[in-house]
Amino acid sequence: MSDNNISRKDFLKVLGVGAAGALVMNSCKDRNDSRSPLVFSENANMGEITYRTNRHSKDKVSILGFGCMRFPTIPDPNSANNNIVDQEMVNKQVDYAMEHGINYFDTAPAYCRGTSEGVIGKALKRYQRDKFFIATKLSNFSPSTWSREASLNMYHNSFKNLQVEYIDYYLLHSVGNSSQDADGYNTFKKRYIDNGVLDFLLEERKSGRIRNLGFSFHGDVRVFDELVGNNDKYQWDFVQIQMNYVDWKHAHDINPVNINAEYLYEELTKRDIPVVIMEPLLGGRLANLPDFLVAQLKQQKPNNSVASWAFRFCGSYPNVLTVLSGMTYMEHLQDNTKTYSPLEPCSEKELALLEQIAETYLNYPIIPCTSCQYCMPCPYGINIPEIFVHYNKCVNEGNIPEKSRSENYDKARRAFLIGYDRSVEKFRQADHCIGCRQCESHCPQSIKISEQLHHIDHLVEQLRQNNIL
Image (cartoon, rainbow, N blue to C red; front, top):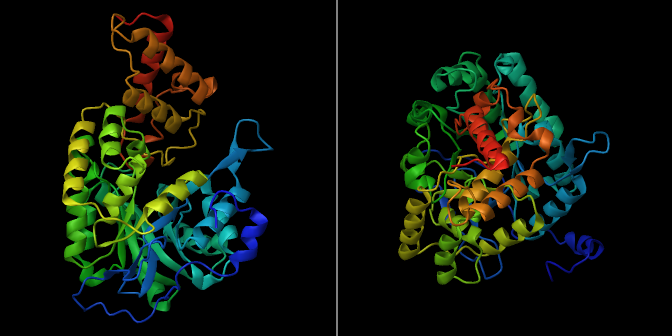
């Protein structure tokens, strides 16, 4: 079957055959066995996606997880300045994913400005419930949602939006992130402990409405150590961390608030807790490396995409249950599926090469934005993620003019300004930032967003006036 040429009509005719690989749903949980909770698929033939089995729950999970934070969009017919999720395209992507064995779908109430759960719920409703695993989160970031009542309303709304009677993987969302409080640990207590919400979720797991309970982590390592260190009490079924070949040893170098993924992974592995990976591409940046770094990877595997190296890196670690990817475009989904069908783990030589690339990458003044959209919408209409995407792209391509006498100044100046106006509407550019900092409390990467916007705006103004010395 051709992935590119099959028509939607013909595809739906064969869809009833079912997704590749039978799924084994949640059963008895033996939490006292000290063996690794994950095992590799023993019969992943060429062309079949690799699965990892979570021994605790017996779930056979595709190593590629479908992230629902970056859905494709189309113009909103009711608003000239907004986009909405393209439900039809999401349905097509889900069809492709299911047909190729992808069975883990990760969403949250906060994604896609509150629409992600409903969109993926509609797409998956067309399938038999035991053919997929759905993961969602308690995204009670704002102090207005810290009360028990508000948090439980969010929890129950997820069931309605997803149109399910149980949730396979449920997470405390972004624990350690300071939100409105400078102290990440204090914020965590207010969100989950003082209001009794974590106790409630533990009871929901006992009842079966939650099949696996875990948390996603950003920020204050005290929260991570507290939750993981008390695993005997909480008995986490999985934990979601940010991991890629740059963050493995250098997350703290990029941002002092962040913790190296190597530490997080090893602490979870010690305690037999399966790992779910987010940001394997570091917000897409590891798919858009500087040309000379791309050349190093292409020299080793000419036919493989740059992104595939990052996915292979994550999959090379045996305690990884699934690797999430927000695949906005069908070609992203197809390429990632190919990479994991089946997974070819990185050799020691390849891991050493990726570490060299990571060390070189640190020399580039990249803004550590992952385009998660948590900062949006800006009350003043600024397209914060897209501004940072353009700036980082210009850094990678050497199009940040430093001096007017530089050899490529004119070329870089034109590339930056033309690209800026094409990718970000003028009324949504950085010059509209008033420094209110409302966005910063929601940023998992703890970026000083207003400072970065003012820096970019100053650069743009200098370039437009052509007065960089």
